Amino acid sequence: MRGFDLTPYRRSTVGFDRLFDLIENNARLAQGDNYPPFNIERLSEDRYRVTLAVAGFRPEEIDITAQQNLLQVIGRKDDNSTDRSKFLHVGIANRSFERRFELADFVRVEKADLADGLLSIELLREVPEAMKPKKIAVNGGHLVDINEGRDAA
Image 1 (spheres, rainbow, N blue to C red):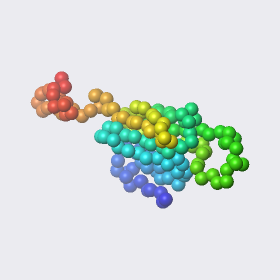
Image 2 (image 1 turned 30 degrees about the vertical axis):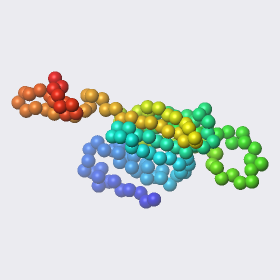
Image 3 (image 1 turned 180 degrees about the horizontal axis):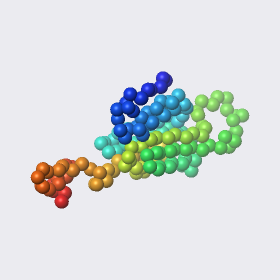
């Protein structure tokens, strides 16, 4: 994959540095390992699901860490625990992994479930009331909450 030159955009925008850094970093990392495969779904306007195919992993072998703007999923397998000498063919990947997902502001992990070899992580975006848009009336009127159409006082 070829790199992106975001210099023209950096010259004419203010406050988008984090976004540009994410784009450039993801372009570099896109050539990396694709294990385990995953899906990202948008369930509704503020709900998302990340699903990873982690066949062969038990819940205690998976570590999920959520911190500000980052979701990290680590799977740890003991490579010496399985006697490979009995296998004629090994086609099911069974190795340790680390996956990172950059999260938007105000996105938090709601829950995680492991079933049938799929790890599903539910995400929810909760914008604080103070950050939601407010309509400002001209000439000293009251503030109006755009989301509910009522006086915000």
